[in-house]
Length: 245
Length: 300
Ligand SMILES: Nc1ncnc2c1ncn2[C@@H]1O[C@H](COP(=O)(O)OP(=O)(O)O)[C@@H](O)[C@H]1O
Ligand SMILES: [Mg+2]
Image (cartoon, rainbow over the protein chains, first blue to last red):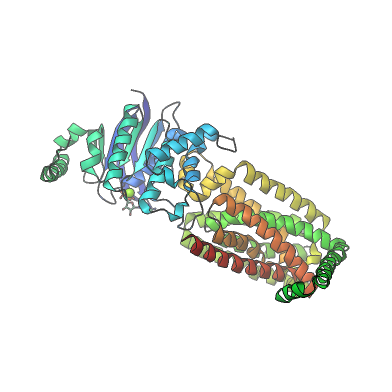
């Protein structure tokens, strides 16, 4: 599998206070990395670091040759956009093609078609001409997911994608990610939904606690923390009558 | 209007005569205005500057950077005071000073939204104070000060016309060729930066173009009033339009129209131009707010 990104001795700090310390991991083509940790464990910080939106405190993020930020589709945890921003759903999704546009001032027909199909895959195609600020929280989230899909050529980085989605939509998203991942797309997902999201993961990155963990799902389950977390989820799964994969 | 309607129903021929009289009055007024070379110059600069201010204003207002415009106009006042004291031409002094200030203010507001706000207020009052001190120690507090603060339509030279043509070409090119990028940066700067767009470069470019717009516009509009030209058209359009592109186009049209009407009104009623233009913009804002409410209630 082709290596896309490597992180060595990666730590982040805000005003001298370390929030993520000494991470070593790599992301290959076709990987499905599940990033977990409690609130404030530094997941969003790590994502921003991977996207080079913030500078690392120590170490660094190294992108393989032929791989760059413009191959990544990204869903932020929170959008900085204001509540009263005038924008249509479709034009927001189209802005996912920004990196491929280069200096071309307009989006071409192909890109418009792809944007429409991304909206359709997320079930918000009929909202394409609506004003973004008039959509519900979950609908806005889906529009931004569609934008991330348009931007993602080789890697998809999602920060809590299912927050605000209804259970059906979340299931649909997992299926979609599975499909993309099978096609070779690297997926990096931050989520608290152990029950639903972790089952497709090839790797787990657990932040917080005494020591960060990076390894495969099986390895993580063998650790004390991993065992505890998954037992709890599996137990709840049995109570609810559906097994976890 | 009602009287005219009544008249129209009673004696149509007389009413039409009145109407055409109104039309010919307008034509007479405009041809009278255009006979003054300084007025034509002022109109040319003003229309171009209000176009630029409206376009840049949409981005500034949506990014919550309106304060930068206000800060820059105060710094521009300081620069003009300096130029007067040095007996130098205003533009060569003001342009570099205000462009530098734009870079500084942008840095401050990027660092932290709240601290940046206070820092901008600090710089703008500081610049105003130093400007007043410079003037009172050199030429003394005379009509110049009043003109800088509230604007004078007599101040425009041929060099201003040339510079404003160059500026508006630059702003128009920026908005036509890089519209998608400006949209993305304004909507979600983090995403745009993650996509590899040079957001800092665009922000700097917008701040610098704003600086030029303010330097060009403030001698006519006045340091205390020029911010209105940047903020009002964007705010008015946002009442009615719900697409970024429409807001941009609508702001440009509203701004140019308001400026023209403002200048005509200032000529007819002998009111300072800057105040008149801002007043017309306020009326437009009220009309648009009302239209927005009306539109929403009709849709629901
Ligand atoms: N801009 C910031 N300035 C200072 N501290 C921050 C900033 N952003 C996050 N933090 C701190 O860093 C820690 C990790 O935050 P974050 O990465 O958002 O956590 P998570 O996404 O895992 O919930 C938190 O303790 C938070 O208070
Ligand atoms: Mg987070």
